[in-house]
Length: 394
Ligand SMILES: [Zn+2]
Ligand SMILES: [Zn+2]
Image (cartoon, rainbow, N blue to C red; front, top):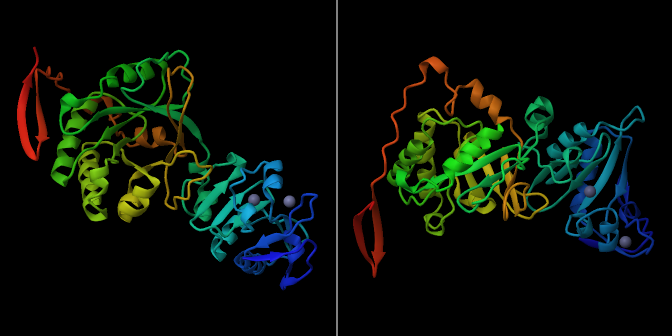
């Protein structure tokens, strides 16, 4: 990182001079610039066979960043970012999709398509790929611009939804405008631990025709316990239809403390069993647990529901289909609930495969009526000693 004075004409590389990156505000102040940014821009120049790269915005002081709509926390204020327009051999701007792909190839860690011809690039720690034509914090649903622009399909439908549980007791379904609803089905190893609002939420959403998914909150400490959780979850889901995945919610402190290998084995045990029963399954996790406590094969194979609150853009580098981005107000819901974005057309995929209860009508197995719960098994530990017993309904 170097500091330059306003108007510094120093030639930093064959095609870039310092003053091209100075702040565009009227204060004519000094500015910082990360050498790595210039080095990669030079590589990009070559990769795209440019005749020029115009820097519309480089370093920004705090007030200028805010004035142009930045958050004041982005890479521009650190001298690590540039918004650029690349000019080709024909003298015309190069399509920003091509620029994103080339920027990825030369190693920029932060890249976003701004519009048809402008692209944001930066050299942040971590990684973020976005598409601002889909919203200022839209994260592409895969880790490869080539794949993203190549197929296009996955990125198109951007649904906004909510996830709810026993915490949301009062919902006026006539006012709910969510594109989908993910409902807590229950927790732990017993069918009796069905979420107290699951039936009511499910019925409310279905009545409005809002697509539904579900999640199961885990306490499992071993794969065997995870399989018992899967069985309980399957009992609760039976006979219903879900347009969105069934997620395994693993976030308990003492589970995370088990470490990556044990935690990954627990996750696999649950997801494999629920998947084998005909469900489209996924994993819910925080940025940190997904990044450092979940094996790569799980993150690649299963639908990921990333929890990362109150950030403009999550630095999570893997692919994810859903993002729980904050807790807030939603129409029809009394009190706050979790808010989510979805980047994948799960309903089409799930129905096409006949999963989640959408199997062909004629080979749908007849479901037994759910047995009434008249007793539950309870385990507790007092002063290090474990107690088990049965509570009977009165
Ligand atoms: Zn300034
Ligand atoms: Zn920018």
